[in-house]
Figure 1 (cartoon, rainbow, N blue to C red):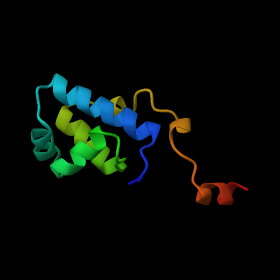
Figure 2: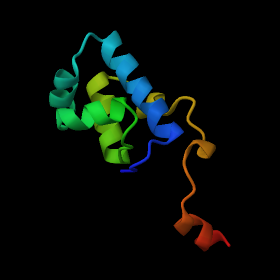
Figure 3: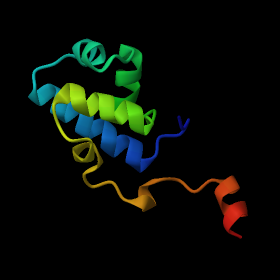
Figure 4: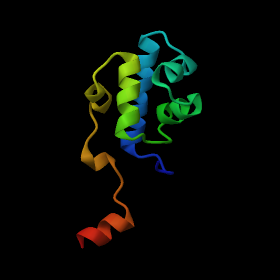
Length: 90
């Protein structure tokens, strides 16, 4: 999980929170449904952490939406390029 929020993490977190609230669920209820610790749900929704694909799929399943819906509006330029990435390219 990244320590510095990326624009992608913030966007995905906003989509999770919006969908959770639309369905009338609390963060704790979503955590139980997705079998994820509620502190992780809070971190994801605040954009402090970016989950892996298996977790994204579990959250989407718990919200009864397609996983791709949680990536709406996310583009590659929203992810930070690390020094390690730059070394591999250059």
